[in-house]
Image (tube, rainbow, N blue to C red):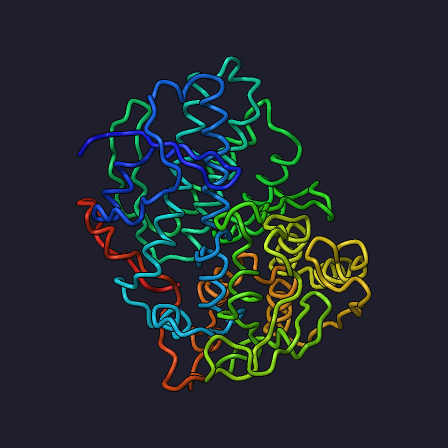
Length: 458
């Protein structure tokens, strides 16, 4: 297989596709996955000069945005994970998406091939760019882009750990172009990998304040997934309540658009969930100002679907998404208090966020004219846990957190899967299945070191 470099444009992002060989391997040489527009073959050496390194940095960020929440026809991580949880209901007709919502996902689900590949492409682009900046930057110790690439890479590991079954392999291309096939890693190893990248970002002397806070919250999130509550709280200490790191979108090209707006507002294939499958939260009927919605009678793409609900926190395809926030930092600290038995401090932390709604509404793009009343102390440990995860669900709605939280309720809090995931009769007919994560696509079997999902549990 010939190694080559391709430069292509994804809107304003100039993307250096430096992992063509790796992508071909992971997709069984499916050329459709690598189809690009405005392609021009270029000399690889030109991508290590100053302009080339900046092109790589821009391209890696473009890949991350696309994998996380971008594109006209791209399900991406936020929407896919939200569909498997209770955030979104499938108002379209694609059977591959219905399988995700039904929790009966085979490893040959064609939609998930793209979603999985795009996340790996972003990961490899970010890590390769960090390495090349170390090697070729005029001043590596003072180059803030290195910590930036490492921090964003950490979030790709978080997505793999939270959304996929245990066993994800991490193949890579070395700086001299050699392919190293990854072996299946446990979920714990994946989260430790995220921590390592956030630590490396934070250790870089040229890290900017916003990337430092982004890495701190990412590290706290990874440690929370590992059940290290006190360490998670320590990691996010000092991050301001109103901190927000955005996934930027634009109308410049189809690939840059906010995919949530595209699939909800424009194509009407995702509808805001409400009390889905017995256990789903009341995201609409709670009438909470953190989630703005409106009813469009009979307007779903699937005309057999009940009334369609628009998510109005985002209304244009250029609206940004706050995917890392100080709000999350406070929620991490609150959960650590709950774990430590500091129930009074825990409730005070949740109510402090609610009391600051007027300040924080703009971050989640909620209804700033609304109010959040103080919460009362639940009378049981289970009730306090339920309230903690409910607050996370409403503060962090459709930002890629909910599937990981449902899995944590099973893994760390001893809940049964059928008490946290949508279950029972499916609103379009049939029954929900039992999957609690996304499988690794069958295409990964082209990697001889991959042994399949090690565990389909939470």
